[in-house]
Length: 418
Image 1 (cartoon, helix red, strand yellow):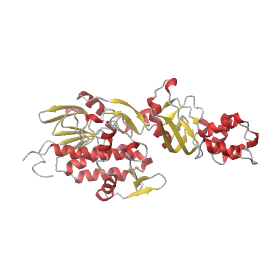
Image 2: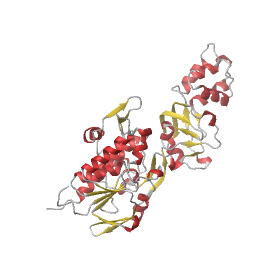
Image 3: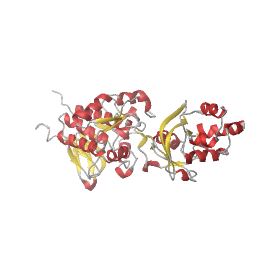
Image 4: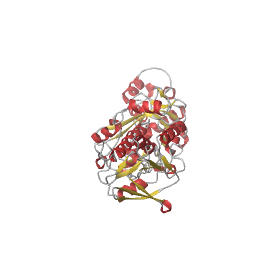
């Protein structure tokens, strides 16, 4: 950090998660004095628990159409693609010296070490190398414009005079990691609006737990849920739990269920296709002549406990043969095998949600710099914004892109005319 800037009011970055740490790195790299303020003692809590402790740093491909927002999709695209995926990967591998490895089956990029801590620590080390000053175990309680900058109020009555502020406070998901909604409260006080927030990428529950006996059964499935136009399909892992259903396929459609609310009349149907075979394929197979019991036929394609449960629910004796099935029985069996309505009644909420849906409308932020259009000198990035993607590194991709843009934007806003 140059001598002529080290005594200047700093850029204050609030939140040392994925977006905030990236913002701090890029702000400081432009020669601006930068303070990273974090309520926990070491930051990066969600990074540490992501990917089962492995940290799915990035997807191998990214498409803005995979993301969800109530805001302009064109604005989303500009923000997301401001830092191309190949350049993000190069940053992690060359700047942070964290080689990434492709998990071929899932298309996910993990650190070769399979250690999420390497990612968190690598980001923190790079921030320190860039000159970022860390203020941990401190909560921001308020922000107010002050002259050409800001006053950042901390718990205990301490105040920091700041040239610009970057809010990277996350949303409401996994509150144990420090996401307590502080950012939402602060931006509302400054005049921002919020699109309705909700738990996204969260397990679904059922009461009563009709499938508790299947707890622990896992398989690859395709789920389908209706949209206003068309439907959302999600393929991937599915897990029966004591309370309901989890796994990537469930998480990726869960926001549609969550947003439909608790009213049974409004619940979005979530239909499960338990194998790669759709209804037409099952219909054709069940019409084929041949020996062998129906039970054996279904068990060859599904975990036995699930196969037996589905046969029971369809009212089919597993010892019967295909030729013994009546038309209505075959139709019932095809339905439970290829278009099974999950009997969900609720969800696990923010406690287990991967991300928060909704948030600050993207129209209230400059997509090039991430500067607030409502409060100049305030920059927003990461989960506080109205955007989220599916499981698989997509939300980190959003955090890295918007965090970098906010750091660069805040630093550029302080360049004095010559």
